Image 1 (cartoon, rainbow, N blue to C red):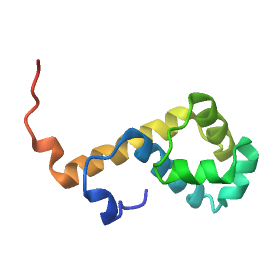
Image 2 (cartoon, rainbow, N blue to C red):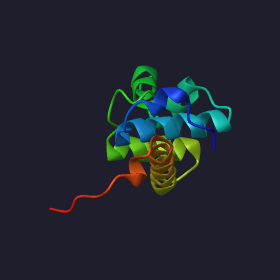
Image 3 (cartoon, helix red, strand yellow):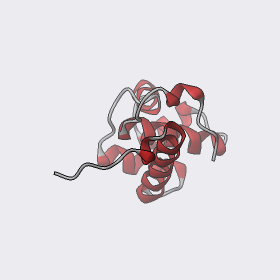
Image 4 (cartoon, rainbow, N blue to C red):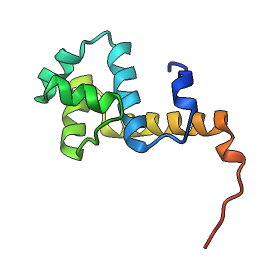
Length: 102
């Protein structure tokens, strides 16, 4: 897995950002172009790009199609996205903050 860039260190990562980051990471690991994954998953290149940059949410149906285009499961994408969020939390000290239970 790639190391998180310093751009992600500024604040807590949203789930859509972690999923987008993970999709882009998996796509580039396989040396696939965005246009290839977009075509295979029947989504516009612009929407895929916006999702990878964390600007748009992805529906569960679309996430399934993108996962299929990447040859992975939705669970694998979400698991890696969770790891990315946890890594960022560790880097920013979020895991050291006390949890308030109401």
